[in-house]
Length: 120
Image (cartoon, rainbow, N blue to C red):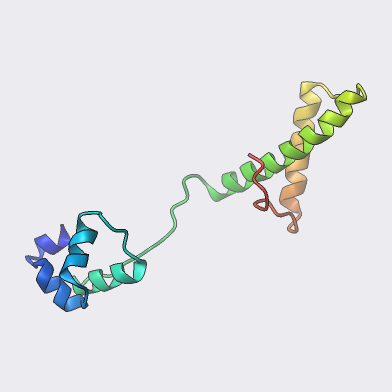
């Protein structure tokens, strides 16, 4: 869109960026997924900068707490299995309390690896 708005042909952009015109055509039609370095060259050829920044789908704190909670839940489920065998299983309210406590402990301990194994 930008190239067209600037009244620049693919051939002109290819010359400005030292990228083959056929490669530009495949990028523009979505047939290939360009590398960031290629996009930088293209936008530089269009006299534009390129900014790449992460955009979290939800607040980072929520993401971190959710992951810690998944790890805590996995650990509690394992413990609950053993407790159930011994007929010492806590009620739902106590389980929720233990889950939140375990989650807080995981978040506090910087040594905890939250992404080592998928617990979700």
